[in-house]
Image (tube, rainbow, N blue to C red; front, side, top):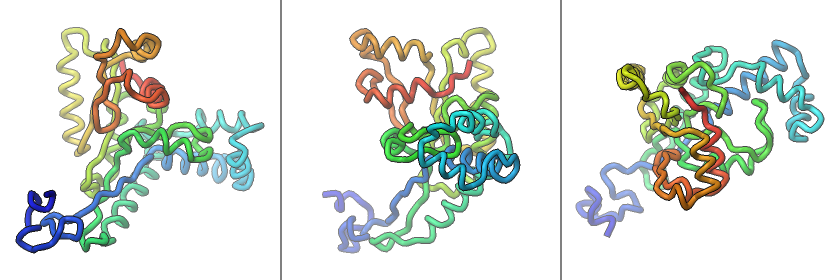
Length: 268
């Protein structure tokens, strides 16, 4: 049935699963750009520039999940530039890695003879994926969620406002990501209060368009409201949130995913 409604399958006499479709490609997602960029910036700062630790000492700290190395971990979190703040010292790693990934994915044929289209989005996989990834040089502990959305900064690390986030994301050549990208942003409801609120938001939307960022999605809800929904789900059954490429009723989400959405940076 699927082959009947997909262009060229009937004319070619080839099933969609065998390459009969006119547009015969598969999407492969690159995820956690922020974790890669923040980790590489951390290694550069701690090992090669600041000489806080040797490479072997960094590796040892990661292997034991920073046990006995909390001071180092805090320095990696707070003393290293982070993706999402329009800082070229870390953004350079993000766009170099993203561009290289996209170039490599695009040259490989699929088993059906089509092409692979690179993209950057996680849906909600950044939580279960993080559960099986060890500690990383950006200070993230073993098992903790990875950065959400594909192109989103690590939660709480984008401290210079939404325009800086857009600038960081735009530095990669996202036209290469032909299978789509995803950037999550969360705003407090107070952001939309006052006479200038709508005009400010329109300016933000025009800015992301002029920077050629392909996609951004918004949650307009406070962390406090989400915590109350966790405690009293019966009272918040209609609360809808954007997760990562889709919307869902908040109270129906897995608790770990709920917690990750709560941790996302709030712009006021």
